[in-house]
Each structure stands twice: as C-alpha cells, then as structure tokens.
Length: 227
Image (tube, rainbow, N blue to C red):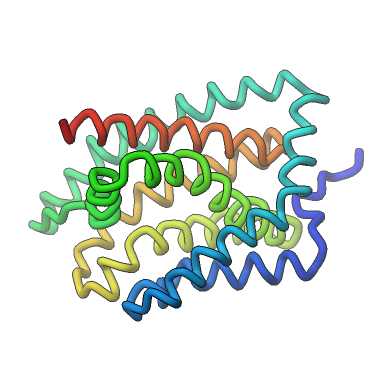
C-alpha cells in the first residue's frame, strides 16, 4: 500500500509558508510597533492563504472521496474537551500553578479578548475562519507534513513546540512575563491533537474544521462573557 504524502506543495510555496512560520513564532513584527510592518505582515498572511488554496481544496476533496473520515471531527472535539479542557485546564495547569506558586493569566487570550470586544465582527471572523485555516496550513500541512515523512516523533514534537511558542512568545518573551510559559502546555496539546487528526484522516480538511469549531466556541464564550 502506497504511503500517503502529507505535503505535495511546490517547493516555493513551502518556503513561503516556512518563512511565515518563522515570523509567527518569533513575533518580531509585533514588537516593532511599526504599522507599516504590521500591515505588510497581514498582507503576507493573506498571500499565504491565497497561494495555498489549491492545496487546501485538494485536501477537502479527500473528504468527499472518503466521507467516513468526518467521524474524526467528533473524535477531535472529544479529545480537545477531554485532554485540553478537562485534563490540562482543570487538572494539570492548576497543579502546576500550585507547585510553582505562580498564577499567570493567559496573555494570548487576554489580548484576543480585548480585540474581540473592540472589533467583534472583524476579529471574530478572523479568529474563527481565517486564523484556523492559516495555522493549519502552516503548522499541519507545511511543517508537520514535511517532517512526518522523515521522522514522525520530530513531526509531532517540533510542530507542537512551535505552535505553543507562538501563542506565548509575545507576552512570555517580548513582554518579559516568563510565567506565561506555564500556558504553553495547553497549546501543545491542541497541536498534538490536530496533528493526530491530520495523520489519521489523511485530510487537512478535518483539523481545519475542528479548529474552526473550537475557535468559534471560544469566541462565542468571549462575546457572551463581555456582555
């Protein structure tokens, strides 16, 4: 049986995505304070999604050929609520906070909450649709897809580590709040689950859909909580 190739994008597209990934994980654009660079970064995000649309379309077509893989969506939701929400958020993270005596808020969530309160329609749409698509293309399709064929352990671990770093780097590194790194575990668990769904379903469409559903729920909770 022929092994599935998880990334079949042209080399130049992978280079573009990996460049975008480096910018994401280092958040260098965020700390410059330059509106011009910020706009350029946003434009690059749009370019990445646009050029990767043919690959994304091919991934969604796989679902049409094997509709049973839609069951992985349900599995993904169960895993997220079981491993990330229940195990990490409600058991492991409180234990870590108790042991270390630290109780940091989640800087990434606080930042997004502020933006959603200010621009609910725009940021809500970006967080629920554009963000998940971009992140799945960068982390799962590009990084995980390229590494998976060489070393599966590296594919899972490196992708999870960088995904977690991206979500804490602004407050944790550039903001000087090292306690933010306590939050990295939740994001790594999320990434591992998305990687698992991609590897098992063999379609990026599955983690994209789960990611969209999860973010939509999170944004909805934020909007309700802000009223």
